[in-house]
Image (cartoon, rainbow, N blue to C red):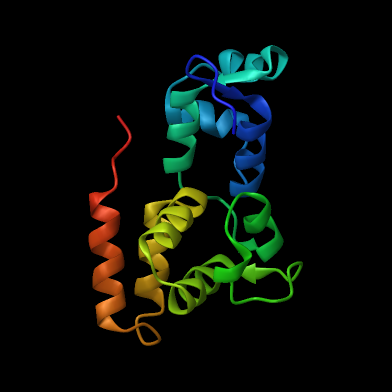
Length: 150
């Protein structure tokens, strides 16, 4: 990803919006940035770096996800448990299964970036019978250490 004077390509912003299932209008409301400003970034071809940071912290609206979507957004194929890259899987199942296969700080960071901290924690709570308490505690601890949106 090329960074120019604290600006990022609009294509990165658009791709993450799509991955998370979030509209520009929803992002505008969440971030407090006017919709006209957000929509104008497409014409300019670049987005302020802080906008991408805010979007990464915004919870996903998606209920299903494919491995291919996450691979295209930067998740290494090796950590994914689902070998059928186009198969739609409920987000909570995807999160829990991925953590069970490849728990590390990088994977937690990526899942929080794609789905939001709240979604990761909710998935762990929803499937507490399938997740060891050690894993749940380590993930929760790591998520608490991540920076919050300003």
